[in-house]
Image (cartoon, rainbow, N blue to C red; front, top):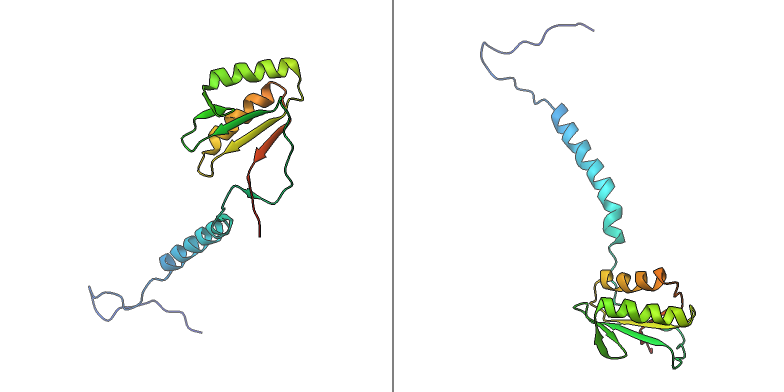
Length: 139
C-alpha cells in the first residue's frame, strides 16, 4: 500500500471530498439528546382525576370537610376560610384529638400546590387522618 499526499487538481480549487467528521459529531449529539428525552416523553401520562372506585369512607360529626376550588380558595364545611383561619381551626382540632379525620375535596383543575399546602399544615400539627374525596366511578 503506497502512501502519498493528497493533491488537488490545481492551485486554489476546492477539495472534492466532504469532511464527514463534523457530521458524525452532530449526529452523535442528536442521538444522545434523543436517548435522554425519549423516556421523558413516555412518562407524560394523560390523567383524568379525580375518580375512584375505592369504598366510601364514613363521616363523623367531628370530621373536618375542607374543599379547594380551581382558583385555590379554601372552604371549611362549605364556608369560605383563609389559610390563617384554616391553620387556627386545625390547631384547635389537633388540641382536641390528633385522630380528627379530615376529608379533603379538590376540584380536578386545582393546583397541587394548594392541596400540598393544606396537607402540610395538617402534617405539621400531627393530624394524619386525611382522606381525599373523589367522584365514585361506576362502570
